[in-house]
Length: 262
Image 1: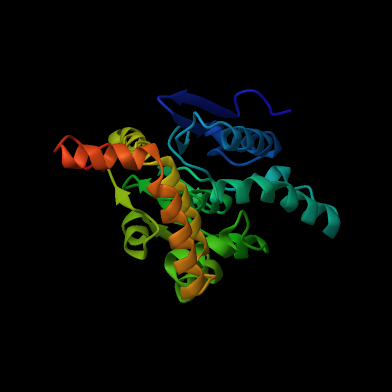
Image 2: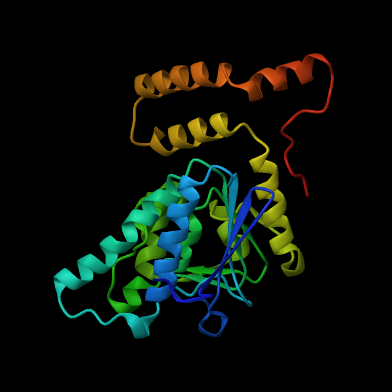
């Protein structure tokens, strides 16, 4: 079972906020917090009252990565099993058919950087710092980074970030496409919540279908994506959300979905 309070979970107006809660250790991922993430992501996947997710860290940091003190791996099988235990919820979070927003303050190192990359949008404070430090400890990037990082920054840049293990600041991360938006530290969490609430007001079917299609697009071809487009649109046309959105458009009423401008 998960250790109490390693992960704080709140649900308000359909937005689930997951707060990594080990601030004294910069929210490093130890076995209890990994267990809590697995249980919580599974619960969110099954709970349709959750319309959006916010990931954040307690204190002044997002997540410093895996807790080195808990990495007592004795052989190759144990190491592989340790990672395989993560992959179920990592894949589930990456493919979650609802909006996911990460609010990054302070460090997002190693698996913390990887965790943020699982989100649809990363909002960062000016003091946010990102790093893939795996080469420094003789390890391989994990928690899905070998998949997500090249898709976000491109293969050449991904190689540089992984093999140099250098730190990048928030503005450089924004220029690379890692960070969607930089906001002041005192507004970070409220802005992430604002974005999540805005996205939660979108059509659940349209968002889910579009996100799943985008996730497949770089591994597919034009013909397959056109077929996904046709199938998805066929479903979206029949939803009550679409019908109500069209009615509001015709009647010049406020739309159901409005982007959360700063």
